[in-house]
Amino acid sequence: AALMIHLFVTLMSILKIFSGMSPKMFLKKMRETQIFAFSTSSSNATIPVTLRAVTDRLGVNNSVASFTVPFGATINMDGTAIMQGVATVFIANAYGVDLGITGYLTVIMMSVLASIGTAGVPGVGLIMLSMVFTQVGLPVEGIGLILGVDRLLDMIRTAVNVSGDAAVSVIVGKSEGKLDETVYNDPEAGTLTDDDLDILDDVEHEIAEVIQETHDKA
Image (tube, rainbow, N blue to C red; front, side):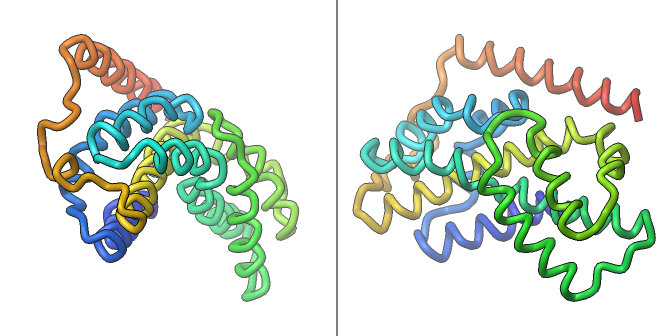
């Protein structure tokens, strides 16, 4: 829920306030990229797809997108930071540990720093989460309570991460005069070919299988 609130409320509000562009159009044009990110659980693997969406679909000049997208895939892990904060509070409650004000501030700081240093590859968030646990005095074994559902959570937070990269690219492009608003507002601009759509259908089928497997294990 926290990830969805961040994507649909926080990021879209920031996009609207700082660029004046339509969040609805943004989400519509980012759908394919979000699906790809969801299936790969890797911001780095999604870079080419994100670049295509940002330049061809959203109208951001390549001189801006070629910097903001790879840079964002490296340090903009807001979905990961949210997951680490929520997971830490969950484990603290499960073990009956009172974090206190100092503990919560430490969680916030460590989650942000750990997310910046997290590589854009699947599953690495759990490794960084162990560092957060250590700093606030929680047993690292608590990660076992999250491990069973982390694959699905990893897919969701990767989709949130790449959406943030694209939103920032639009904002920077707008501020630098490198955003083609005609392309952004054209629903058909940069649409996918039939071959691309076939690939997406296969990816969506794979996503459904992963979700079903996760549900069966739970």
